[in-house]
Length: 196
Image (cartoon, rainbow, N blue to C red; front, side, top):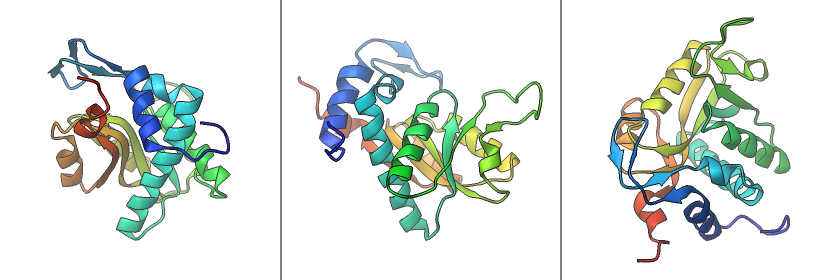
């Protein structure tokens, strides 16, 4: 992809499968065992991957906004998986002429200074609507924690834009919490690009 080429979902799938997908046994953050590992940070930290993810996740943010009938003031999620995503989406929005600051949710409250859960909070007035970003939705647990922390910081999470829905119950858990999900790929969509 060059700067003049619009992001392509099929090219992003190729990048995710080549840079982020590994067939091996792992224990996921949820405690579940899996026969493959999907480390989307590898794609998000690649220049072409970051550009594609920024643009395509921004499209997902805009679909959520249209569905909900409101506009987000910021995007972010749980460190460290959402950190490159938040920056990429914020930069993609800026390139489209939109002010959409990024924020980062800490896994632990800052132990000094402000003691805040959320970095980048000064860019978002109290009551701001935000979209949470997630690399892989499995059980939804980390995103639910992120939602709880942004609520504690007087922000209003509207929904979740994700790269991959592992189809393991996470989407349903998030939607029960009032957070609709727009994922770029389901696990089945993503694996459709694998050779047998």
